[in-house]
Structures are given as structure tokens and as C-alpha cells.
Amino acid sequence: MTGIQARFQLNWPGFQLDVDLDLPNRGITALFGHSGSGKTTLLRCIAGLERAAGQLTINGNIWQDKHHFLATHKRALGYVFQEASLFSHLSVLDNLRYGLKRTTAGQQVDMEQAIELLGIAHLLERKPERLSGGERSRVGIARALALRPDILLMDEPLAALDVKRKQEILPYLERLHEALHIPVLYISHSPDEVARLADYLVVMENGRTLATGPLADTLTRLDLPIHLGEDAGAILDVCVTELSPEWHLTRVVFSGGSLWARDQGLPVGRKLRVRVLARDVSLAIGPPGKSSIQNILPGHVDALADDEHPGLVLVRVQVGDAIILARLTKKSAASLDIHPGQQVWAQIKSVALME
Ligand SMILES: Nc1ncnc2c1ncn2[C@@H]1O[C@H](COP(=O)(O)OP(=O)(O)OP(=O)(O)O)[C@@H](O)[C@H]1O
Image 1 (cartoon, protein in one colour):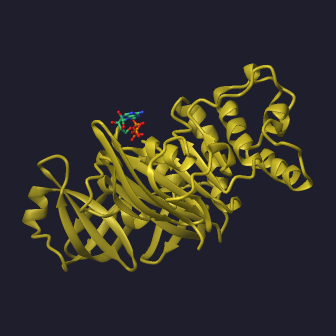
Image 2 (cartoon, rainbow, N blue to C red):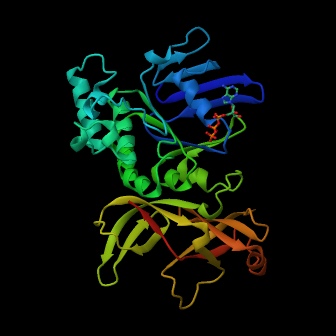
Image 3 (cartoon, rainbow, N blue to C red):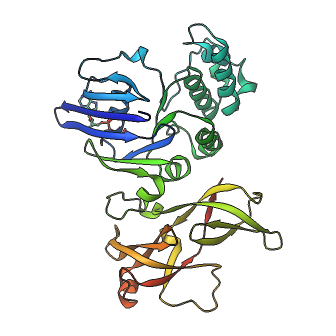
């Protein structure tokens, strides 16, 4: 049995946790939900810091069931918090070594890989006080990885950083998808971070899981109360197929067609994600004539749902195998008689390449 099987029940006055999760054995799973929905409590149960009833199996190893409860220090896990709590009297290298009982050859390789992945080789001799916030976070993550965990738990690791530092660290986290062969559970309140990093999404509400599934499918479900507001949109897996140096544009293809985006110097053949925000998509019920919009894709309306504002509606459009969301005013949806099954042309004003 691979992956994570986690079933927990916890009864606190005013809060009950009741989850039953089966999660993939690699990739980043984002835990998303309102404040107080139980995300941190779930991570603490996995870490053995809360004694919930239930069971927990990580890649076939039982960490908890009716008869066993493995103590936290015996669980092969890395835990990264908002503030990386580094030892101030130790250099970065000694911080990384701390906790490794004796450094075996295998651990040395893991530590070197962690140093490389997080880009901290030039910081090894420094004391934590001489690191920027972003560098401290990277060292904190590398330290967790050096322990060769079977699972990495990250509780809003970027929340304490300003926008600039976040942008600096995100590319390192993006590399974790590919490079790590362990599951990562990642709590975040930021839809942008989730869209960039996550492969899988768990939506929590009041101590329960409302939905779990691959990121692109779960983000475009209209039946979930994930109120993303201006961040509502779709994620597409694409591949760069053409460059147009003359117009500084890049063409990417996905299962539903192709899109032009602003050139960011990516080579042909590069696979990446793009994010298409619902507010940037409008719909026409016939092939549009001359338009300044380059990206026009035919598709079919799959479903409609009220948006947060009473005057707006979100429309799910099936484009090939992919789903795109469009945000329309209720007035225009009514005047075009937008309904499930209808053929439409999605006009996409802007596409963000996430690289
Ligand atoms: N030790 C505790 N005893 C009783 N209730 C607790 C305890 N710790 C947390 N809670 C409550 O459990 C609920 C879930 O808290 P938790 O920190 O897991 O939420 P969260 O989704 O991580 O929130 P946030 O996004 O704000 O970090 C909250 O109502 C909180 O007040």
C-alpha cells in the first residue's frame, strides 16, 4: 500500500476533526480552507503531536492504529513552519547536520541534494542572524529534507515573508515537485501559491474534508464553497510549441487547443502550467469576428453557478479534455441564454505562464 491513509477523529470543545484521506505518495498536496477549518490540527495529528483516534499509514508503515502510536521523534517526517526556528549559535551547515544522529553516506547525499535544491551552498558557513527571511526559510526546508523524511509537512512556510521574498523562494519550491519522491502536505491561504505548487488539493471546512482530488479538477468544481474571488480560474498543463520572436509571443498547446502568451524566454518543448483566471475569460455564442483577443477556443458549457457577487455567474466550459472557467455578469449570461450543453467560444484575454 503506497501513499498516505489518514483517518482521524478528535473531539475538542467547540471543534471536531473528522477526516478520512487517501493521498498520493509523491507530489505536493495543498490543504486549503478557512481559518479554523482544522488544517494545522490535521498536520499535528500526522506528526503525532495530537493524540487523535484513528489510523495513519505512510507508504505501508503504520504510524498509528488502534494498538500503536508512534512517538513524534520516531516518525520519519520533516515539519516546516512559518518561522524557520534555526539555532542561532550554529552555522547553517551545523543547523543542517543537527538531528542527523551520525551522518551516513546516504544522508550525506540527501544533505547535498537538499543544499543544491534550495540553492544554499553559498550560505553554509553563515550564522542564521546573517540570513534574509527567504534564505532562512530555504535553510529550514533543507534541514527538514536532510532528515530524509518519508513525508514533509509544511505549515504556511511563506506566510511570514513579504511578496518579494515569496517570489524569490517559489522557484525553489516548484523544483520540489520533480525532485522529491516523497509526499508533501502544504498548508497555504494563497490561491497563487496553491496554483503554482500543488498537484493535489484537499479542501477543508469545520474539521472535515469537503473535497480531495487533482488540483485542476478540484479548483474548477463549482459545487464547492472555495470562494477564490478574483483568483477563481483554471490551471492547464501545457507544452511550449512555437516562438514568435517578432511579436514576443510563445504558443503553448494543451489537450483543448493552443494559446498565445507573452514570451518569457522558454524553449520549445518545455512543459509547464498556465493559469487562466475566470475574470479574463468572456464567452460568445458564435465564432467571434475580428477581435483584438488572440486566444479564442470553441467549447461547450458544462455548468453554471452563482458567483460571490449577486450580479455575477461562473461558467464551466469544457474545451477538449480541459476545463476553463469564465466569469460573466448574470445579465449577459441571461441575454445570451447560456445553458449547459451550449456551444460557446471562450475568449481569453490573458494567460499567465507559471514558470
Ligand atoms: N489545543 C486545542 N484545544 C482546543 N481547540 C483547539 C486547539 N488547537 C486548536 N483548536 C481549535 O481547533 C480549530 C482548528 O484549528 P487549526 O489551527 O487546525 O485551524 P487552521 O485551519 O489551521 O487555521 P489557520 O488557517 O487560522 O491556521 C480552531 O477552532 C481552533 O480554535
